[in-house]
Image (cartoon, rainbow, N blue to C red; front, side, top):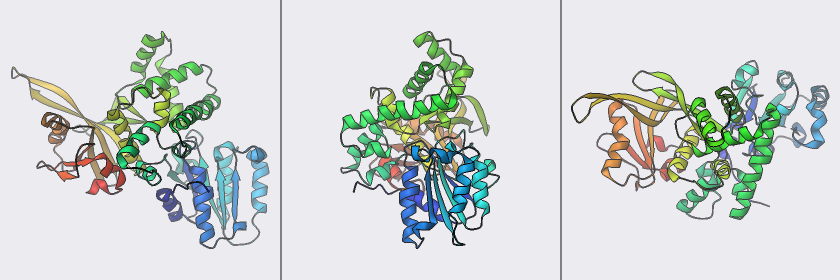
Length: 419
């Protein structure tokens, strides 16, 4: 029996949604553990809570044996045949986007009083960004990420500092985390990237110029957390490979990468003007291992890696995350007023909660501290302001009311923002 990684955060979300009359849709990048969550952990929960195995109906549409069932005219009659009595039947269906007309099929099943339907899907284009609308108000999404640092540490045999170095290098894809050696991890990431993610994106979107798409992935991998936009990226292409790629094509490719849950973009928000600024944007990778594999593990700067990991953690905790922009007027040395742009790494919102967060790997000097907290002092509202760093011993508040916290406390405590 291999190591079983508990995914309690997601399991609880499924349990809470049991028999709520909606179609539970687990979305997320391929190989992040969706099938394991549904068909091992959740199934185990059902069995332990008295559900008869004959009332758990499973189907993985990505398996060769089940290819025929991608045809709804074959699957739907088969599904109805499974219903032998009035007890609740739990349908656990994997990679649902591979079935034609799956929305109608799932709505048809959910219409039956004794069907509780759970599905997984790996592509946002098929499972549109607004899932509830696509399913006529009947979709209930649970978005899954690769292992968070706290999930990773539940099976890592070592201290959190070594664990952190391993995590920001090889990421949190469960298959990779469970591989024994560094060589295996690197080979697996390389193979997943080429044979699973890029292969999927190219086939699904019928991309002819695979080289362009891969170059874009390289450019984005080298620029995580940097402000950019399709026009800037187009210039990079031109200088690096004399490419004639257009900004429109770049925009399209970025959308494909987002649809496959490989990257996410954050918008810039004008804090004083309370409005979104068009571009530039920032892009973050859903898994650091995949990002590092793309750059051959060459430039793993801890500063950018830490920012990316903090971003993913905030998203996993259910926050909407933007990059903050603050325009201030300050006098220069000659006493002349000059406009300056200050940046806040993350503005996070969930319901009525709002936090401003700076990611600063090493603070070291008072000058560096002053630089990081400067935007906070100019914001002028009462929402919590936090600096996350690697060299703060334990959480404390500065006299300005700013919370200083180390990255381990932030990641390992789910309530860390409310310290």
